[in-house]
Image (spheres, rainbow, N blue to C red):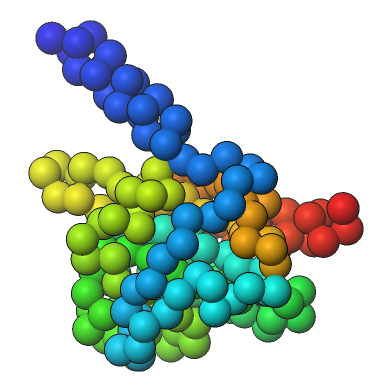
Length: 171
């Protein structure tokens, strides 16, 4: 039974990986409600580098750590000409509270139906609840996927993304 479960999980992981947009592909378009209650579309960022990160849930330890690290490095991202946008299936109201409590100054978008997370191959089932997987996409100024990070570690991810962004901008 355990082997069958492992095979099922492996198949699910492979299926998910196959649905993640490839580097060089056009980033899937979206319009979602932000923590500010406004509609935000990917197209608004045309001409800028976008760090689009998906995370499971507001107010959880790993997600809070990841958000704090992005916030701490926000001036470095701005200096690199990049915006940070977080996405989870939490509501815009939850995002608003999370940003206020944690002092976050970048947009968090509410993907309450999970469709955007799914279009980025980043929707997972966690014990019966649909949540975003911890994946990040660097989108170039032309709207193409420039780098994909899957199953990221919240502790070091912001630095990892900054390093990749610097490499991409040199190329």
